[in-house]
Length: 194
Image 1 (cartoon, one colour):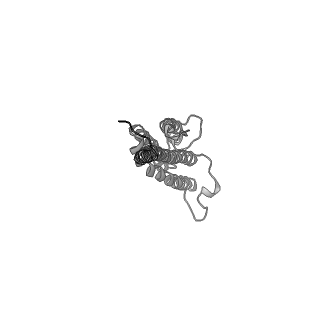
Image 2 (cartoon, one colour):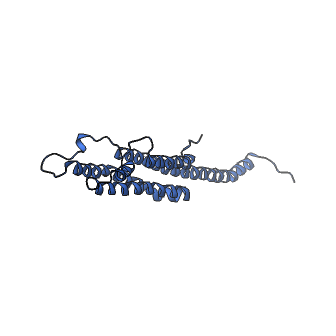
Image 3 (cartoon, helix red, strand yellow):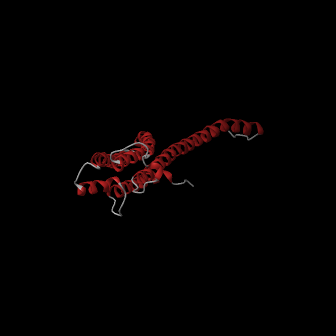
């Protein structure tokens, strides 16, 4: 039995193979699209998260700056028994407002990052929270003690956490170390795909 290849037979073979080839092409395309979409989700999440981390760092350092502008100071109107102490409380509390907004943006990114990037990044976020908590504890103690205590050594020690004055900045250095670890953990998802 010999099969003759006629135009009719070739046409039938092509009609049979066309849906199979179309199905395989669609399957390949969908799988490639899913991989690209997953990569885009990781990229967008990592990018937003890293952007919020950098903004947090910048606001943290700005909030702790020892330089005080005239706009940050308490107006001299009215009578204050101790203007310097009230002024210190005033600008420390007001400096925290933009930082708090940045911190809220950071915290809004954390759940998605925890789900996508895992336990390591979650622990790093908790470490950032710890640094921020140390700052707020030191700041609150400083606000309560400024002008009240005679223990200037203790006040100077607390001010090292509240203000970024010297090159030896424990809180700033701790935050930078955490950010470097976050950059390493997130950089995998930020590389461009060729």
